[in-house]
Length: 178
Ligand code: AMP
Image (cartoon, rainbow, N blue to C red; front, top):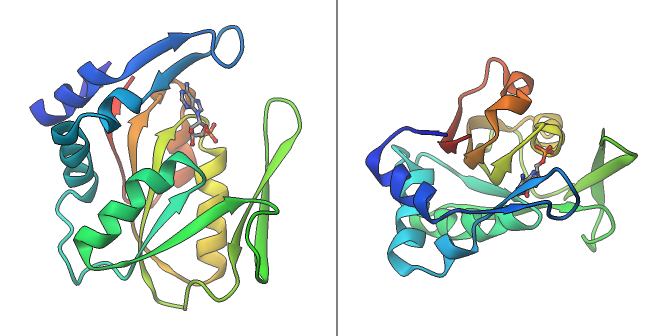
């Protein structure tokens, strides 16, 4: 594990590792102890926002489902809108979809076709970067909408899975790295 700052180290200390969930061999990073602590949750949102200032971001995009927990408060703090990227079949209006491969099978994420205008300045937030399949599919949807990706930020990064490689050329940051 490595953390970038002392503030991130406090977050890291609260992340609970749950072995073999949801299946054998997975070390699940449980963020609920961070969320239930008022000071840590607030600090986590501040750190995800980083050096971005109100007026510099138009829309914070969060990814279904834990990404929403972080993206929505960050949006309010930045005076920005919030747009969800959801799992297929959840959004009620016209959608664009993007599929990506999993170890077994595939997943599809979707966004409303009218959610992002060309040039919209986006901060993309998710809880955890593993293989990067989910976030890069979300990114593809945003790029098809000709959004301007200001930064992609994760609370946690599992660096040994090299998910970061899918975001070459884009500003990408994580708070706690394993
Ligand atoms: P990936 O598409 O492989 O980058 O997976 C990212 C998504 O899967 C994240 O949004 C996480 O919610 C979830 N995820 C993957 N691995 C873990 C893990 N070890 N602990 C907690 N969540 C995980």
